[in-house]
Length: 376
Ligand code: NAD
Image 1 (tube, protein in one colour):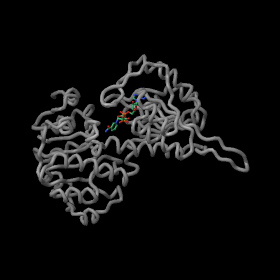
Image 2 (cartoon, rainbow, N blue to C red):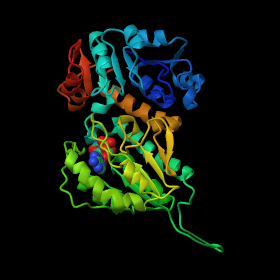
Image 3 (cartoon, protein in one colour):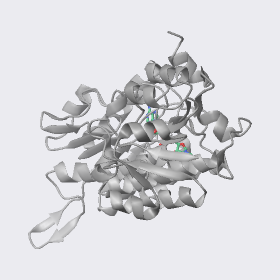
Image 4 (cartoon, rainbow, N blue to C red):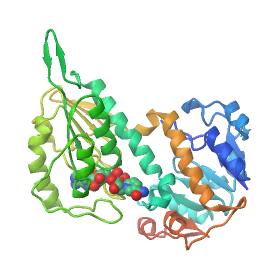
């Protein structure tokens, strides 16, 4: 069985889905690995490191795409890439099945068996494959560094001969994987941190990291599988009213709130930004799915009344060495879950295989993806 990884073609994508460690892992499991020349360059991984680990380096993307029985990628393939892939080949990557209907339809019609990392069930057995978590952790960490770099203040309290410096106050909205890592990072830098999430279950985790959990007098409900559920517009309006004073008191606000497959909930309005002190910083990690902050512009940093609003896209890609290592491990673990004795052995009775597979045998087999990609 041949496994291939082409160079990512999406603009600004520096990560790569295969690293020398995972080449060794896959070769050790009896698979043949090929990588497109330069695939790891933006993540500081040279071709010869792949070769030393046991991979073949191919000069053309087309060769890798056409020959692979299984393709490992970060971003969804373009139409031109899908066109050269082999019928029946397996693809593992981020696919955003809830919104990328055209790509999903095309993968189905080309007979690709595609697995979407967004659909992986959040169960213990799948933790080693959980790319959403590995990438979100890195993003949460980096969000704090971006805020600290932009802020005109120090994070820690400091007693100096010239006087005492008060610590920075950080508010983290959404205490999932990215939010918890943001809390931990801000605490390590010495900030005073508070956090809010619609899921009351995270209170203890937030507190164990040394942050204050903000409880709002609102009835909250948890969704399925540990995720938040989409809240009503009325709920979100009340939530914004109540959280406003906490936002105004903060020097840094980091927003990470998301509901899978849905537009990001609006947590911070333009008026709330006006209530913040000039010099404050907001980092909106939900920028790509519509933003938690009304004024966020995805891919840009803007300033409104002296408040910086950072909407950087694809934050994990800014740390490509670490995020590629973690991501490549996640996808190699998922691939090996689908393989027995060196050959593909798909078992649709298995919870992981069933949940993560979007297209197979020419059909879209995931219900949510089917709704997002009705037949053309
Ligand atoms: P996510 O990226 O979908 O959402 C981030 C956070 O935003 C969540 O904590 C969510 O509750 C919160 N949120 C949504 N709407 C909100 C609103 N209106 N106001 C405030 N906060 C809002 O979620 P995630 O970080 O990928 O994961 C969520 C949870 O899933 C984790 O905290 C964990 O409990 C669970 N999880 C389990 C496993 C596992 O068991 N293998 C792995 C990863 C995550």
